[in-house]
Length: 143
Image 1 (cartoon, helix red, strand yellow):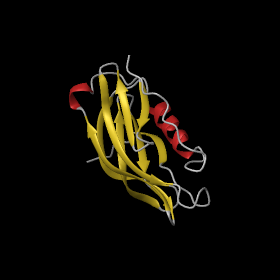
Image 2 (cartoon, helix red, strand yellow):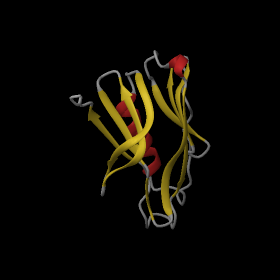
Image 3 (cartoon, helix red, strand yellow):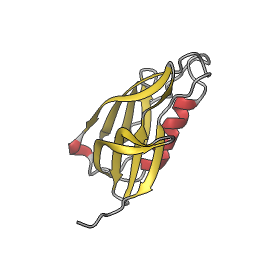
Image 4 (tube, one colour):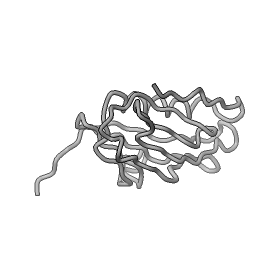
């Protein structure tokens, strides 16, 4: 079984925000399959919606990641790679490498989804950073 080792950060690099983001994503996706992954309008904490990343799961739920930041602190999805040949496999974990800049959503046979993430705590822990992660039921709209 694939697992990624803990991705350590120094106490001046992160206040726990990045590991909490990974934990939130893990809790939302483990045990499910990805139906689709795309850039889309997603809920934002303060202003309604923003451009972000949307994962649709086989359980009829979506998981959205909205970039976060304030002043010199930020977290943003730079790019993603959905490995279409592995989407039929159930997700078994989420791990990170390279100081939380590479996120791996994985199944038994390898990464189903890879995220490249840019982030900085800015002036340590004075400003907010991290993804706003939300889980929602898929709603169908009438045509």
